Image: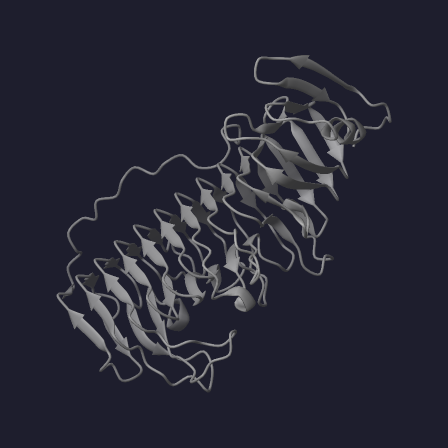
Length: 408
């Protein structure tokens, strides 16, 4: 926060609402009390140390409430800064949270009763280049409520325990999920050395049977090495589409929940140790149209891994794979391609059932096409092209721009 205590703000009236310029947290707090649909809070350039922005506002689709930097990337929050947004149709644009020290940084709720819906965080950054480890557990971005969007942001460098970006669900809420996470650049995250280092988690084991129906698409994950699960799916009905994983020592793991789709993603090993693809647990998942290129991981980090299920599994255990469809994927130069029957628990013994693996193209000059560690009577394998030659060139669309426009 600026080193003065005056309520320094000014405003101008436009057709759509007021433009209100604020120079410090006190001015922001005061202006937020009377903010209305169509109004814009413009944060003046500078360092905002330990700045706590809290706002509950009610915009509309046509007239959102906007919070934006005077110059994108030049409003820098440091220390124990936090943005908490509640209400509806609030747009946050161009802020940079640098080396945050608090347990929460960007939170799409004001408190447990004031969640955010139809809000958007765009063109922002949350970054860390320190070795902070003192926080027990923290998140850079926490998404609550319904139909929120986080897009074109750069999020990188987390060193403390806790998932970088989390979608939180409730077993009681009727209107929740349906969030969109797109066109973000998730930059390097070093190995944490224990559980809790995911880059994205949708839900948790307690709410994993809830339908989240989130879309995660057109993001770049680069060297996100926090733990074995770069993405941990823990809810139902999510779509992972057209993302790029580059040099990630981990996998997209369908850990809990059912009926998710993983399609048209690209997994580049990029010479990273332990780089993996997709791990399947649960029911009715579809994995189709993905490219797995030069992945080095084995066992749980194979390019494609089907886990064994636990009889009568508890919510945080391993549910049996049922009715999975793995179709039309391409595997090139992977050390381990498709593994069926990996055990993550000594009680796990149920093999996949009613599952189809078909139409995939698998190069086998490094590893075998299939590694079978269990009975596979419940798996139909058909029309897969297997050989040592590189499969016909995979037609990749040009990647769409990711991250903030101002980030260099």
